[in-house]
Amino acid sequence: MDILEIILIGIGLAMDAFAVSICKGLSMKKINFNKVIKIGLYFGFFQFLMPLIRLFSRKYFCGNC
Image (cartoon, rainbow, N blue to C red; front, side):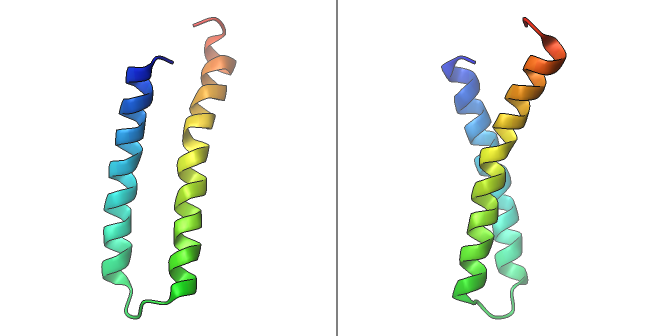
């Protein structure tokens, strides 16, 4: 992975997280601090996990690509 791929993946994940967070925020009737922290942790975990899945699946399916 070169630096351009890392930057593009980061931008794509950030746009995805931003869109989902806007929709989730608009759908909440009452803002609760505990819910906000929980949602943020879920976002962070899955945004961390997605590039790792890509990395391991590329090594598994592609081999020496």
